[in-house]
Image 1 (tube, rainbow, N blue to C red):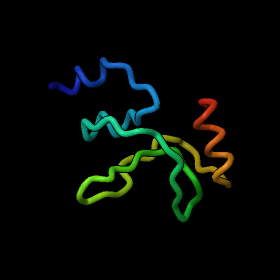
Image 2: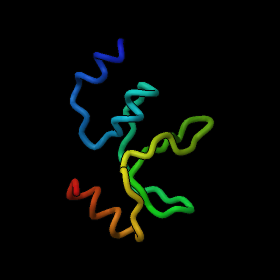
Image 3: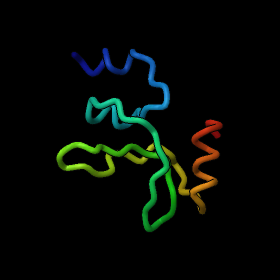
Image 4: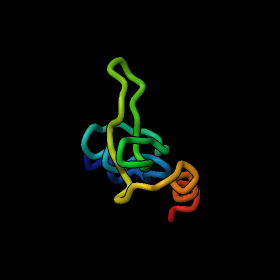
Length: 73
């Protein structure tokens, strides 16, 4: 399957950057780092870990990031 085929399929609640750069459809979720909370993707595979940061900004609280994820804000 080509990357274009993956991109042409609708991406709903999946990380666009993760799809483009890894070919994996990973769900968006709230993740945290030293800089704050962000919307991103996480791979639970054998080497598990964060894959992409999909939000431009960091959020000060988990609740604020969850709200952005739920509302698309």
